[in-house]
Amino acid sequence: MSRDKRTLEFYVLAAFFALFVLFLYGPLSAILILSFQGENGGLTFPLNGVSLHWFANLFERQAVGDFGGSFKRSFILGLMVMIVTVVVSLLAGLAFRQKFRGATALFYLAVASLVVPSIIISLGIGVVFQQIGFRPAWYTSAFGAHLTWTLPFGVLIMFAVFNRFSAAYEEAARDLGATSWQTFAHVVLPMIAPSLIGVGLFGFTLSYDEFARTLMTSGTFNTLPLEIYGMTTNVTTPVLYALGTVTTVFSFLVILATLGAIAYVGGRRPRA
Amino acid sequence: MTVALDQPATTAIKPAKRRCVSVARFVPYLQAAPLALILGAFLLLPILMIAVVSFWDYDFAAMYPDFLTINYADTLGSWVTWKTYLNTLKYAGIVWALTLFVGFWVAYFLAFHIRTTAMQMVLFLVCTVPFLTSNIIRMISWIPVLGRNGLVNSTLVEIGLIPKPIEWLLYSEFAVVLAMVHLYTLFMVTPIFNTLMRIDKSLIEAARDAGASGWQVLWNVVIPLAKPGMAIGTIFVVTLVMADFSTVQVMSGGQSASVALMMKNQMSLLQYPAAAANAVVLLVLVLLMVAGILRIVDIRKEL
Image 1 (tube, each protein chain N blue to C red):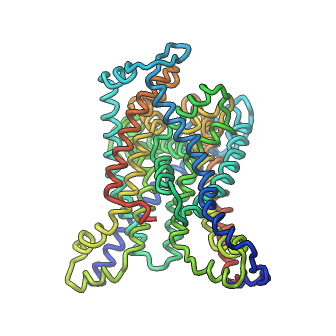
Image 2 (cartoon, each protein chain N blue to C red):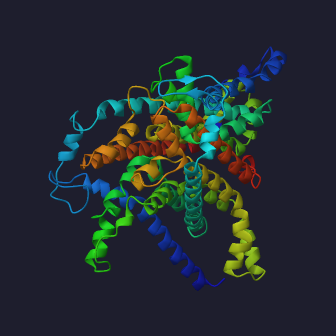
Image 3 (cartoon, rainbow over the protein chains, first blue to last red):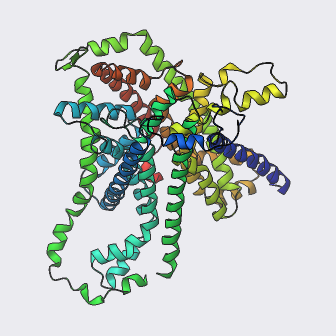
């Protein structure tokens, strides 16, 4: 293939890629800008002055629902889901390295968890709780509902990681006299640590943003996405954008912190 | 590997080695147990419960255990249901085609035109980051762009292309499809990128040496090898669209319907058995679609 033709293809595809990135980030940056709308400004451009009015508005309790409370609940729930997702996925990943009865069934159950429509899980858990007489709450029923979404991702990632993991390292450690716990803690764990952090990021952000599964399972108190979902129908001021900006910036910070952690852990590895 | 050396090598002598072997057989069961328990309690049990409840009787106040098929008769006998299913399938088809097209070319560009691995990862992350932020916020963010006085309309009016703002940009089926493509394309990019990265570059060179043109290489080498990734992406996108109610509700402004939205409305009217019957029908449909796709690809091999 001639060099010229290749560059033409490159430029066409590069332009396509650039458009795709614009498509992804353009609307987000629009609400980022509009959240600084002046006091008399509306939901669309042009900016009617620049102010922090809508951010201030966000923290007044009566203006929008319970922003602080729902953020706190979503944050704690995200952390709970993250920890359980990392631990359970790691254990399941280790289990799948060996043969055991029901391995295939369990694997397909995890895949099913990914493809079953989220509203069905929401309805099902809601009805189960109602029938056994438990009150649904964000830290019980919604917690379980979120795990059905984050665990399959975690398990599939761990499955992929261990597919590429050479058993030679463990054999070497064992030959050097390490116990199986030492082999795990000092050889396997440091090597898969970046992937585990990735699983943690998935667990946290998927839970933090999830709301179809929370719909029937959150009980009396809303999580943040439910609060925002409610606002889409009855809030007609840029305070909605201010909330969007705050949560998006928070998500970005979480992602950055995670990437930093992965780089840190990954950077330590060559010395080890 | 020196990490292992930090430990004193003398701990190696294990007295009860034989007993360890028999205990070791139970280890995978213990390791798999938490996953099995959680999925059993929060996935299997609720689905079984839905299947049971779908045969129950109900009124405005409560549900009554029974064995009635009327919920199914109502669901399947209603003209509205069929129309809603068709509408949902239409969304799934259109969004699938668009995300496959966009996803393939984005993945292709990243895999074959970016030369350094570091740059590939950076650009891939650029694509990934928005997908880790809130879906609802990403939907709302279209309002200032597509609205009646939004960016697109005001620009088009200003340059004189259209005399007055286009009404169907927001709160329309167009807006629903656009938002879904926006939300779900990454689920197509990631698996396709993954398969493309694993294609042995010498295969492509061999095809070129044998005289294949660029399109022939693409059509006869790259695309067949990318099929597993496309299949996995398809599973994601199709199941997400089939389950969607929020995008349809927010972006169509209540003017369009989907199966999940119909279920959600039944749930808000406390008609749980009716919603359950609907859920069973939807679940069977989605699982059949996934089973069909899984015949083409073995996921365990692709991970």
